[in-house]
Picture 1 (tube, rainbow, N blue to C red):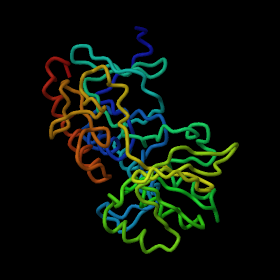
Picture 2: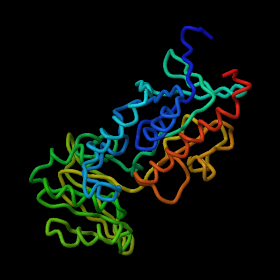
Picture 3: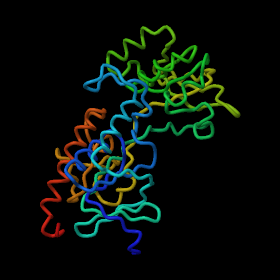
Picture 4: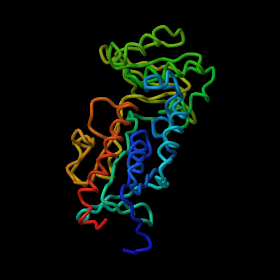
Length: 315
């Protein structure tokens, strides 16, 4: 290994969402050399969220504003933020190597905070029309659909909340759900049902997304009657669940068959010195507040772990 390409740290955090940035705050405040690696803008899914109403201390705050506050706080004790796409993590005795392009970052502690992404429908037209009317982010793309008719697919919190958000731009939003009732929180359901711009199609799945250069319609199938119909629309927003971003640890043996990283209640995986936090972790509730809690625990446990290795590491 070319020694010039090797960058040493005490803690490497992969991902700069709420969990990763909180872990960086705690680790760097404990006087650990902390490097946060992120392939995009800091903030994670916060940047795709319009308004946040359930984070303590703020009655309402935009996702982008909260992301900025997290980032400023995380960097205030000397943590270093670098852009890069992690290709692989290897374990060598007590040290972990994180490969990012032509650089190798090495540390005794790695905290995985890579989050999750929206599940795709995997139907005809989805990939071809992605960015041409198919979207997974209402905050990113809603503005481009002023006075248009839109379809939102899903029945959980994200589908209902983002569908309601889209009504500030769209003329009409139709939420299509494969069941006969929503899974979203009651308060989100109440807002959607009360919004005159929101309509619902129940017991229905989308078979294809149709259009030449742009989305023009969706083909629908009623799961109870098998009736197939076409619905004209200018855009399709997909919210049918999330998939963990855990490919970089798929060979380490620390995930469930679905890809969620398994930890104990202090964020430790089965590999000493490797922690996982936030949405990529197997857990019951994926929220900003729970990611922050995970990050604070992992950041502190990183310090404790390094202290336990101090004689071997010759600190």
